Every structure is written in structure tokens, then in C-alpha cells.
Amino acid sequence: MARGMTMRIPAIRPAAFWSLLALAAIAIGVLALPGRSYSGQDREQLLASASAQHPAGTDALGRDRMVRVSAAFLLSMGGAVMASAAATLAAAGVGTLSAFSPAALGSLAMLACDVFLALPWLFLLMMVRSTLPLTTSPAHSAAITFLILAVVGWPACARAVYRGALELRKSEWMLQARAAGLRDKQIMRHVLPNLTSLLIPQFLICIPAFIIAEANLGALGLGIGEPLPSWGSMLLELDNSPMLMHTAWVYLPIALLILILLLFEGVATKQ
Amino acid sequence: MSDNCLLCVAMQAGYPGKPVLRDIRFELGHGEVLGLVGTSGAGKSTLVQSLLGLLPWRGGRVSGHVMLDGKNLLGLSERDLRKLRGRRVALIPQSPMTALNAAISLEAHFIEAWRAHENGGRAALADRLTELLAEVQLPSDREFLCRRSTQISVGQAQRVLIALALLHRPALLIADEPTSALDPVTQVQVVELLRGLNLEHGISMLYISHDLISVLQLSDRIAVLDGGTIVEDLPVSQIGHGRHAVTRALVNALPAPPEVLMSYRDRRNRETYWPAVAFGD
Image 1 (tube, one colour):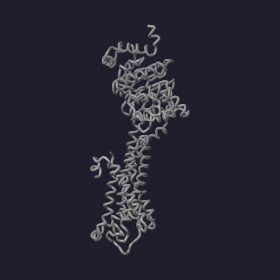
Image 2 (cartoon, each protein chain N blue to C red):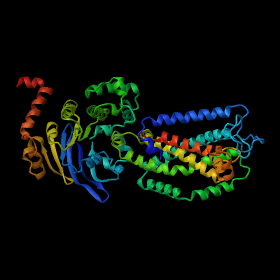
Image 3 (cartoon, chains in turn orange, brown):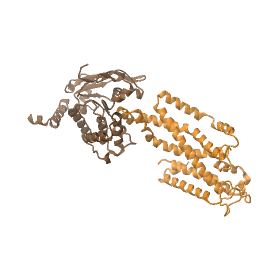
């Protein structure tokens, strides 16, 4: 969606990048304000509209929405970036090793990736989540959520890396390097630098995908545990129609989420 | 098999279900240049990869023997083969731009190729590099060596690859259509450079090309590859007397009779490499 619109605008990538940084700086600023906490409740003002004290109102439990949105943004972005880095690294390892091992072994590894991709992940996630004790701390639940996203996310990426590495294996310079008697170790060192044009877009594309996956899991109650704020738990507010009538500020999280996803798409857009 | 034979080949090669080289037999003496001519698709690249023992890596199979220095390369382990590649036998590839790794500098190419066979430090390489780059007429300053393959011309890239091939002073150079990607002026320069290497250093060469003119400029003997076999193997001066249809077609496609083209070559050689003799004429 963002791609079609942004292709023709030349400097979309830096603009999107700096916008994201600015948003992150604002979010950090909001959290750094004294006396604000994402879990602090103002029992006098449940479901309040915007006020000087709560610029974006409060939720049904009287928690400041601005603070919660800021914290959710930083948490999901940080988690998604780390999960994406982990998934990309795993994919780089598996993809290149498969491409440079004997053909049969490589095909087998890619078959394993296909099987992995075909698993009913939502069902498995629910099972995994239900085995976690109820006392799992919110921080652990956040870590587990992003770990699971990385685990689910790498095989698709590994397929792309595998294809790129196979091309590289057939490349003229690699033949030349072998003809010059370079050791396998020497040659393999140059594989990843030659795949950066593939790995960086993979990394960038995974970030918004993981953000939205976390929001979806959260909306299903499988994601980050309360009282930690997350996109998913805030989107759940939209389920409550009386609340929607009460204040328009409940739309802030979804509006911001869409904006941030568009910005990440903008950063990932190749020019 | 004569004693003077550096490379002695009798082999078949191909890919599963697709034989490419049915029966390849030729010999290459010390200090000799053998020009191997063939039409496109005759199996020249397969031959190059077979000789270097790289065909299995590309999914192909080779049988028969490739004797280098009296050792059968096809019987060697990958480990032992690697030690010969780049040191005893080196390759000058067809497309210079794609044969260099665009992600690293030119200097890094030399460092990697050096470390493949030498334990000596950077100082030893620096000495060799200065000498080598002068030989292939490339600048050896840091600014040039820090460039990447995308920042030099095709002609320079081909010289870099020739220098890389010469790094360990191999006995045999395999040149796989080294001029096909170059403009006519650079083509002549590269052919001259290769001839100089042969005449001054006695490097043996297997010069593979579909361009008979450059083969005539360079080779002592010509072999014609067609349909997966060597159909003709003649001293270069006898090329006009070739009997095979492909040889005849190649000779007929020349812009001038081979004798005329050869006389240019002889005169040039005399003037460049034996000027004293030339004056004595």
C-alpha cells in the first residue's frame, strides 16, 4: 500500500527514517516526564477525554493513554527490531549454509523450511502460551512474544537468502576465487557481505510485519501481558462500542500504529 | 606422451544426462601457447572448469586424465587440487567485471589470493605487487588498489585478473576468451601483454577463444573444438591447410589469408622482442 504511493517521491526513505526517530524521541520524552507511569491509575478520571493532566485522555482503568501509547510504541519497535535482527541472522546462517552444502542437503533444509512455514502457527502459539504459568511476568511475556515472532519469521527469510546464496555460488567471481586456489574458509567470508543487498531489505521488511503480528497476538490475548502496554491490548479497546461513543481518543493507538507501519514500509522501500 | 609435455589431456566431461565433451585429447609443451578455437556452445567453458577440477562443484562429471607435471589432476583430492590452482595453473576469465568481487577492494583480491598459497606477510606481497602491476601496466598506488571493481574500466579489470593469475608465477595460464568483453584497442593490448608473458617468462598458455585473429597472433599451435572433440590440431603456420569443415569455415571467415596475418605477428615479435635481430636483417 505504502509502496505504490511512495515510489515516486524521491527522498521518502530518509524522511520516513527521521520521522520514526522523531516519534521515538517524543515517546521517550513523554515517558521521561515526572510522575508518569504506564500502569499508574487515576481513579478520579476513568475513560476521561483530553485534559491538561492527560493530553490524550485515560483508559477504562484511568491510565494515561499518551504514556501507554508511547511505551507501547517503544516496546513494540524495540522488540520488533531485535526479533527481526535475530530472524535475519538465523536466515542468513541457514540460507547460506544450505546453499553451499551438497545440493541434496540444501534441498532438504529448504524442505524443512517449507514444512515449518506450513505449520498452523496460531494454534501452536495458543498451546505454547497456555503452557506458560499464569505467574509469568509481563516482561517475560514480552520477551517470549518477540522470541516466538523471530522463530516463526526466519524460514521465509531463509528461503530468500538461500536463493540469493545459490546465485552467488554460481557467480563468476566465486568461480574465479576457486580457480585462484582460495580456501573454502576464505571464500565463505565474502558471502555475507555480498548478500547485504538482500539481507537489509529482509531485515527492514520483517520489522513492520513483526509489529503488526505482535498487535494481532495482543488483540487475541496471546501477546504482552498487562500491565505492560502493547498495541494489541490497546486495540482491544476498540471492541467496546460504548467506549467508542464516549471519546475519540480511543482511536489514537490504531491511528499511530498505522502511521508507524507506513513509516517502516517507507524505510524499507527500495529506491 | 612426450617428455616435454606440461599438460596432457585425454578426457570426457559433462553434466548428468548431458555429455558436453565427448573426447578431448591434446598436449601442451613447456613454454608453448596452444590456441583452442571453437564456436559458441562447443564446450569451451566446460573444458576450462574440467581442467581446473571445478566441474564437480558446478554439478558436472569428468573422466579420463588431465596430467599436469606428470600428475593426474582428476585423481587428486580437492585439498591437493586447491594447492595447485592459482599456484601451478591459473585462470584468466572471460568477463572481467563479474569475475571480481564488487564488495571488496582490488587490494583485498590480491591479499586473499596471496594468502591462499603463501604464508609470507604483507611486505612480501607488497614487493611482488609492485613488480606485478608494472608488468601488466597498472598503477600500483594505494588510491588505485583501494578501488572496487565497479570503479575501474573493463580493460583495467582484465589486467587486474591477469595480475591475479600471475601472482604465484604459475607454469600454465588458462585464458578463457580473455578478450571477448573488451574493445578492439584493449583487445590488442591484452593479446600483446599475454604474448610478452609467454616470450619473456616462458609461461605456457592454453588460449581459448572463438576469435581466430587473436589466436593467430598468440599461438604456436591451434586446436579446433567442435561437437565435444578436438577435430584439428595443427602448428599455427599450417592453419591454412586444415582439412576439417569447421577449420575451413574459420579460416574463410578471416579478413585476410592467415599467412598475411601471421607475417604481421612475426614482424611485431621481431621488433618488440628481438630488435637486434631485426636490425641485422
